[in-house]
Image (tube, rainbow, N blue to C red; front, side, top):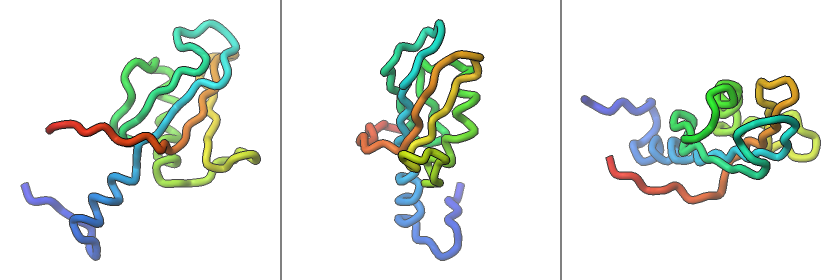
Length: 111
């Protein structure tokens, strides 16, 4: 199958933009009721399409709404740091997670 690159971008530029989408860090910063995750837990999206393993499905559902915003660098509504999105899990008194671009180096995977 032939690789399709947006007009005006070289293959290297296109791949570079793709690499800039991740990684994305999610970290629990507040725990208000029972949850199998623990305060301080950290997980990484390699990119917006590669969900981290071990994260509950309800939280992943909420994160889906924001992970692309983070990947593309859209500012958040947080007055103290517009580079972080603070997201509440769907439980009434559940957990709060910070979602941000990460400086963590991508792990190399073989295809």
